[in-house]
Image (cartoon, rainbow, N blue to C red; front, side, top):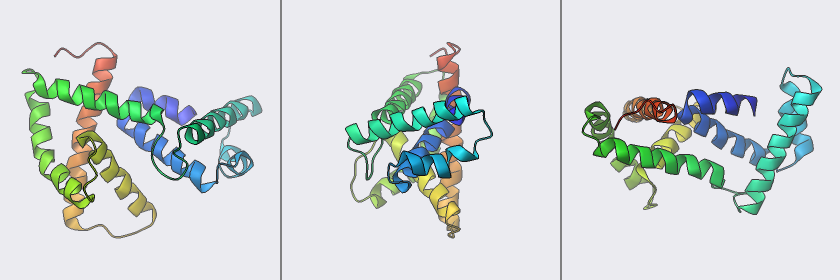
Length: 180
């Protein structure tokens, strides 16, 4: 909760990746609040009242995951809404004649997106979600200490740069500083 609030304000891409990790953390703890209290919340150096707020936040996420049917895979609507907002902004940026740098970054990233979509087994996801899936998959591989090919690393670096730019534009848009 504390990290999520900070990341949402500072970097929407990091926020979304963090929230996907939280969803997987909840799954790993089998939706059991006692387990989450022991394995996650107990490690926060916070007063008891704040830990209770964090526990409530996890419980609300558990409830959302159950009610939305994403207990085994997928993402809650809260996280899907971030993808929708980023996709909307992405399309507005591409249409804007004032955002040539963004357009260039997108077209430099597009071959990697196309390649990822080809490898995904035909699942049609928005391009922005495809980028996030690639980054999240990379993060999982790194946590598992698995090797990543140089070709994959090249794609990850480009996607990371592209999403960083999109995140900056998102923050500017949220602060009413983006003129399209």
